[in-house]
Length: 180
Ligand code: SF4
Ligand code: SF4
Image (cartoon, rainbow, N blue to C red; front, side):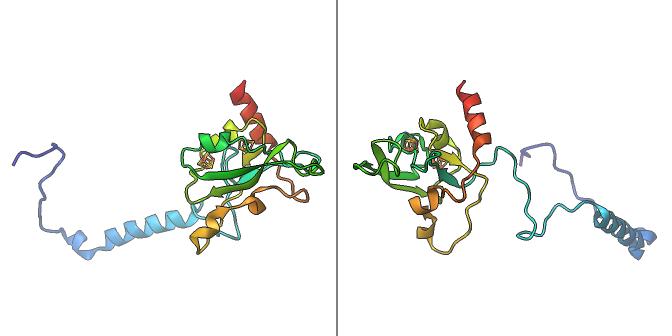
């Protein structure tokens, strides 16, 4: 039969030498390799006690931003959902009622805003598509869970809390640099 490549080599069986039969050189070589790795910098970390630093461009869990007065920035325009290649975002828009000006920045807001983290591929297209600087990806990872339904993040887990505001200035700078 015609070989597919010319990389195949015929296997040769030969008598082992006296030294090879002792196995000592092979054991010595193995020990040297083990010792070398013992003193080398380890490739693994003791997670979760030790966490690796992510790169500045890492894209993790999303955050729906509020403005400095605490109003939600999202106007439920739907551009992020249209841009999402994984169809991971669903939302229901609603009209702001009188008296809700402090809750929502504009007349329209997302009454429901869900992201299915099992579908999301963390591409960041939603962030790029948003004209209101309302959605950003953060360095936070999505924790593992047992139920599939727990991976559907609703507004309670997406909208930032004013007590623990998330600094997205680096991502904003990157976004401005892309758009200019
Ligand atoms: S990061 Fe990408 S896949 Fe995930 S919700 Fe945004 S656009 Fe969709
Ligand atoms: S997050 Fe941005 S793009 Fe998505 S609906 Fe809200 S305002 Fe529109």
